[in-house]
Length: 326
Image 1: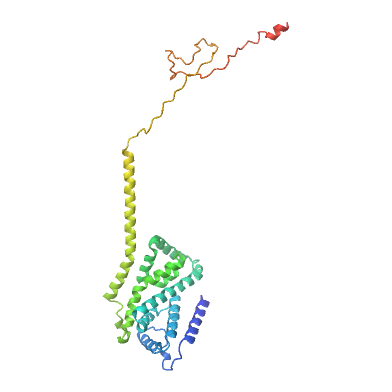
Image 2 (image 1 turned 90 degrees about the horizontal axis):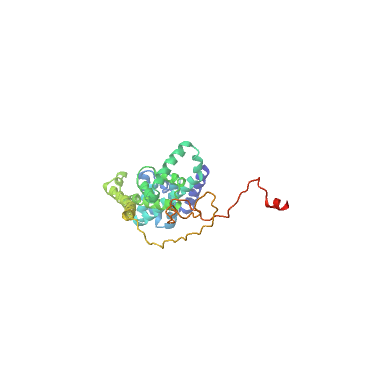
């Protein structure tokens, strides 16, 4: 991680050294990442001075600096959004700042995806990640809207979302899209402040917390939640309609009586002919006639076919062959 930060810092320094125009000695102290209102005013005057002479160089330096701050979650992004509104106007600054924020957050996402698994071996971090995974899994159907609301809300910090998302199954495209849309409302406020930066005299003139900004962010939240509410409403309507149709079909099925749809011909069984059976037990040879002689075989056992009678002789009787031989 330290090596990545060092290489990125060298890349930023090299880009600024190559792309920035040669500054006058009086302008060098103003070239710094703004951390206060005075720094912001000084940098705004410096950039406007060189903007008309080197427009593309100033743009490249601005983008590279913004991506660096977002990739490592460093402070100063708000001031850069305000500067964009002061230099390029609200419409162009709004698109530029939102794209820089989304792309820089994606770089933070990739860094976390590369080095985050080492932190997951720590039980404390693993337990927190599991909690976030459960929350995001519960909002799986509305994941983009959920991430947009997280971006608008002051808590949790945005860097937490950048670090956690690659480890809970959020893809790059949903992450970039939700970041761009989620930062849109706040960026409107920042770039609008930048549009009037030249007339401001102190940081109190920013008016970051005002009813106008509150209603603006509320409108963004409502606009984000409208698709979620519509999806939830139509899902309930579809489920209730399906349940009603199933209930009607079940009721019709239970109300109907059993019906014989068709009746086929009754089978006719021919009365088999009984073979003569030796009357060994002194009973009638016709097994198909009951006591009344009507051939009803409901109660009595029926012998369908009888084999030839077997005559058993006693061992004391001489056989025919023995008699013939004597």
